[in-house]
Image (cartoon, rainbow, N blue to C red; front, side, top):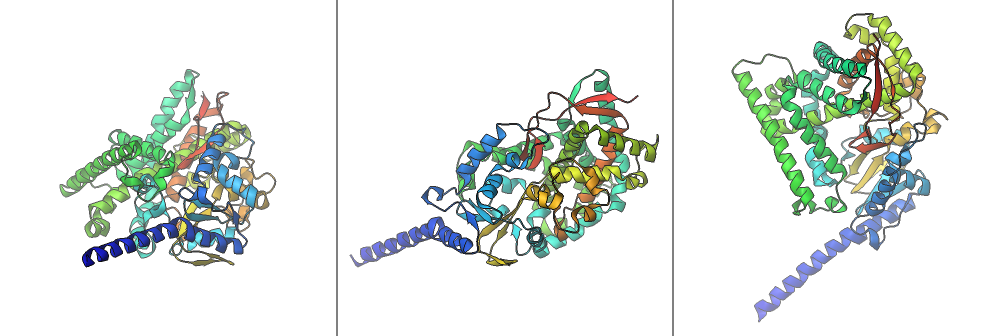
Length: 509
């Protein structure tokens, strides 16, 4: 009998402890954080019983569905369509506002100097992959997953591959890849065919990444890019339940599909690694490329196969997607604004005449960098960044409670009239005629590739390859937006045209 009493007591204590932890997680902690934020002047939806599990996600899903159902005009502000729930929150509560990501408040940081602090102090404001759904966690790999010394060590090893001296040696590779697309477009233009340039650019940049960074055979890598793209689309379509802590263990159709995709991606990349290691061992590969650099570094010898797999997957995904959408928006905007298209074309002919594009000529261009900067301002590949505050942290005059996310709405700042003038939503490359520092007046209001020590490692690669591709296109074609084009920017990891980018091409010769 005494043993039974003890067992019942232990069971009661266990049930009470678990119940208390659940109550604390679902209700007491969120309410405490809400009161703390409101005392500092932050406003947002109240944390009520209907937000217990999913926070603002149900309302957010509805707002996104409504926004995506309606295309907009080219001159319309895109913030209400691209980040509609952020837009609604700012309209309702002002710049000092917060939202709910489950039980965790997500504080909007709207002051540029504070945004800069968040990006610079990366050891205090860490990447929040650990609190995102399992599909996102599986997709985002490589160097961007690391923090502090772990990140710095890897960045130091990888940096030489992205220095301009290394990249400009790969220009002939970029040129060969681009020539094939240009020749294909010449034939299509002669038949008066409208071309959706989005898939063409995705394949072109994927090939440049494969052949220049990794010295792999793009024809064998196509399947890998297709799988990664499908994986990215799944992460955007994740259901409410995907953000619950135990979601990855549930036998849902989405989880089964994600697991299958992940396994296929792993198999392809591991095969690439195995084949390259064998080729290096047998002395069959001598190219100076990122792949060989990774395999010959302490990352391979000190951290093992999982490290190499993560790096490869991260570069395959991030390197090609960002540049492809940058080029797509460039053609859409230059197809709309013919005067800027012609200025860029005349400069390209003046600098290069009839010779192939080279590094020296690309570095002399003035108009094209202005256009690229303006496109990145209006259509940044990544429209917002989130960071996690694991311990209570001071940010300017504010105190951010522990286990809170901070959100940096890049696209909102990039189009804010108080920083960019009344034409903030208009395409005006001239604002960058004297460079980024002059355009921003030295203020941290322009973040297309991040900021500070963790600025995107591929920034030089992106600009160099984008300029070369655009120079070849401008010297070969004139182009305009097709009447069938529907302006509907939306986010699938990066900012893309929802219904493609149909462009009418005309051969210049």
